[in-house]
Length: 246
Ligand code: IPE
Ligand code: IPE
Ligand code: MG
Image 1 (cartoon, helix red, strand yellow):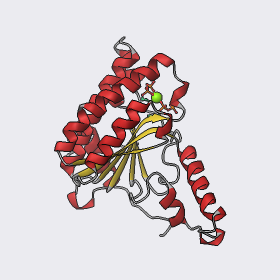
Image 2 (tube, helix red, strand yellow; image 1 turned 135 degrees about the vertical axis):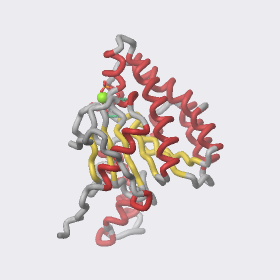
Image 3 (tube, protein in one colour; image 1 turned 90 degrees about the vertical axis):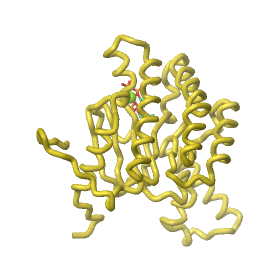
């Protein structure tokens, strides 16, 4: 846990920013419950928080942000809630991401998109294509994403290569595995943020977080803003990262 002393200023060193921040955006439901509004309203406020945080991260100079928007387990929620989240996603891809494009932001999706509605798959393809030359920062959205599902799909791809004699078992290295994950070519997240007080990984980026720093905050995702992002980065910059050495 991280405590900021009253009046203590948070000085962020612009030369030691995490290249990649991954965020488990949790607490939309509790935010809504606190206000006695439908869960859907919580997700809407969460989408607005995301827009804020992307804008701030870009201003700070963060290169990659990966956000957990919908997990492979979230299908267990009511049909009504899943439909509400998917509708918000449609709007997000249509509005917010068109604005980000103008701001030189690239968008990529990780996860198994084949289970999403066809119109959403088309929207994703269009934005990924339109944004692929943008180099301001990259936002990776995890949709129908699960770390275990990603590893299964990765192993299947590698097994196919071996079956076709394009690869031998001894040639399978950590780099090989990394190159068949959805995050191929993207540096591992150095900082993982989870909001709403839960301290678990919930099947997010299992392989990639091997040496990430974790920042947990009780702030509910819809309330998360610039100050909270700065606090998380300040926390990161005050960790001693050892990577197994001494
Ligand atoms: C996170 O908020 C959004 C998604 C998982 C889609 P939750 O909906 O999990 O909010 P809580 O955990 O119920 O408060
Ligand atoms: C993790 O949050 C998934 C997303 C933020 C999309 P959940 O609310 O689904 O996770 P659990 O159920 O608390 O582990
Ligand atoms: Mg939750």
